[in-house]
Image 1 (tube, rainbow, N blue to C red):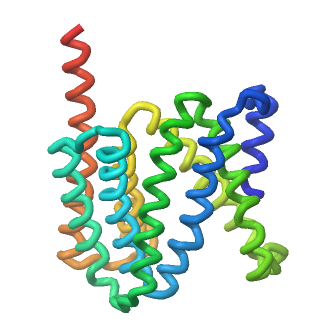
Image 2: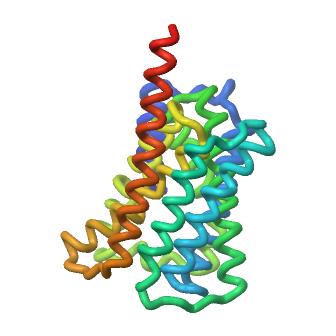
Image 3: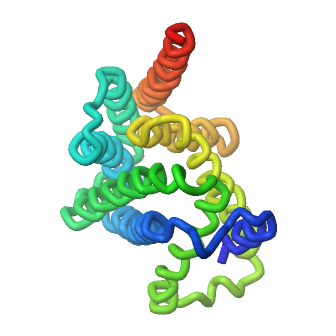
Length: 253
């Protein structure tokens, strides 16, 4: 439901051609995202926010690189390896003192599956963007994903949607936390590799940690700050390596 406004905008702008749309890529992108949501949140419920987040985010970087290597025959670069290692270690250090160390095998398994589905979503979306623009891709993918998740919503109940206190948070998460966020993600995905995009997505826990300190007044230990620095370092490695590569290509021409 929260992507209806994006779909309407895309249709009004005549960006969606239903007859010639890339349905295969869209369906697999929607399916992978529909699987990611319950897998990730179930892993968090079973094994805690810290462990579930670290395993999901950390494994998605590795799975994205493996898919890029095995399926698309793009051997991971040393730069990607260094950035990914920094990012994963940084993420572990950031969450290591959160006090939620309940390790349950089923929760870990779900987090790993969530990591795989997010990596697949990124790669399929990369292929989709070769045929469609980012706005239309986000609108169609998440509209179909929402339809796929409807049966789960009906099983667990949707009474909370009718509570007035939930409307503002729902609107904010739908527009800013998801719609605009994934629109920006896919726009950036058009210019960089899928594995690099997944690594850069680690800016999410980094931003959450910094906002928690400055807006909510949370406390980060020295270990957590080292994790923040390593996360930032991994992101900077990917960013500046991309700029250097682009500069070299311009000079070569």
